[in-house]
Amino acid sequence: MNLLLLEEADFISVDRVLLRDRRLKHMQEVHRSEVGDSLRVGRVGGQLGSAQLLRLEPREAELSVSFDRNPPAKLPLTLILALPRPKMLRRVFQTVATMGVPTIILVNSYRVEKSFWQTPFLQPTVIREQLILGLEQARDSVLPHVIIEKRFKPFVEDRLPAVVDGTLGLVGHPGDYPACPRAVDQPVTLAIGPEGGWIPYEVDLLREAGLNPVQLGERILRVETAVTALLSRLF
Image 1 (cartoon, rainbow, N blue to C red):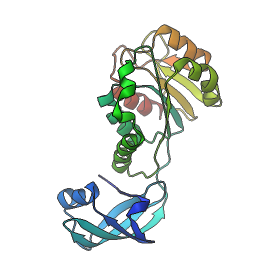
Image 2: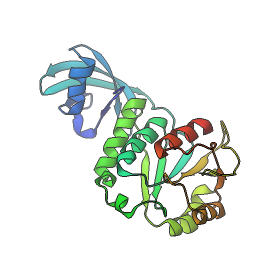
Image 3: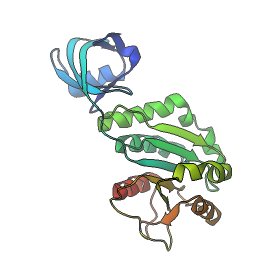
Image 4: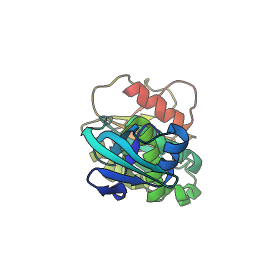
């Protein structure tokens, strides 16, 4: 945890907070904080700043906080992601939050198993927990916006063209396609498929909506690896 992210419920006054959860445990066991120590903090959805530890007890810590700078800028990106396996989904949420993705659209695909949509990891509270972990790692305070689209064809035909408009539209897919561009200087809409890849019908629909297929080479990557590799190459 490189940043203590503070929720509105933590505040007992304008510049005082009380912590009693995993953040307290992290301060005690990892940071080994002591009264008087200075810590990096951020307000969820707001600015970053610093805190002074005023009181540290086994079950509670009180801090004085101040905020004086904005969080790091997000990537100019909308990420469209075929729903990964549940265990991988948690890691992907953390990864995209850490890397600064502002908007994630989870979509269905022919190769996405129906059971994946029943996972408790899609509950809003669980999604938020994983995004918070990613923000803490990156020292960011602004949560990505997560959109769930369970019907692939209506989303791609009816709503995706408006998302792609004014951006560089790309769909990551292995095959005889151009290499993914490097260090782009414009907003991007990027679609990444499931582990087995998009089926040809889906690639065709995505292309009609304005997304051009690109590839990273012959190796087939796990979804979480593909996300990191593509974003690093693009930005």
